Length: 184
Image (cartoon, rainbow, N blue to C red; front, side):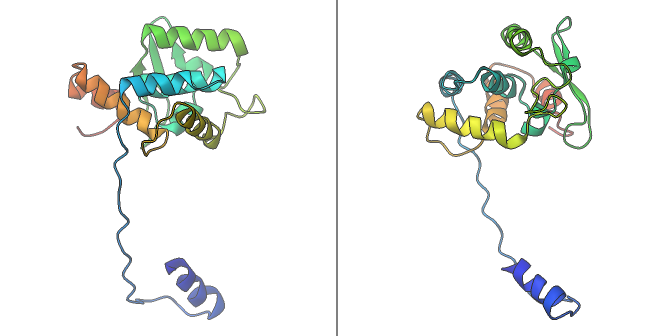
């Protein structure tokens, strides 16, 4: 409604928009419902496409944001040091994230299966990475197939990663570095 009023004043009436005295209501904020380890495993198992399954494993196994996930390059995987390089994540920050042996094996199998050259998860054209909506749709379909009715999108895997890592004893400062947060 607010944008409609702004459009009316600017584009139709050609009047400058000064203080209209419109108070915008606060949007309710929801915390996504936390996925359990069993639900994460069921969700990943319910994903039929190997590329999307690998992406879901990577999102959960490294706590990645969806934009970071789709923008991964083949060169970002450091198998020798078991690290994943995230270039220009949120806030324009680079970081290194630890790769577990199982996830590293999954990424190697992905590479052997698809032989990507530049982007780890290429789109229809190999010169362009997969778009965000593709993995979000795959996440929604896998969640439905697994029978998970909890609210939240693919970012829920990042929340689950953080919570499960804290529960497993990871120091909060290490988790902060892994997630790319400036403050605890």
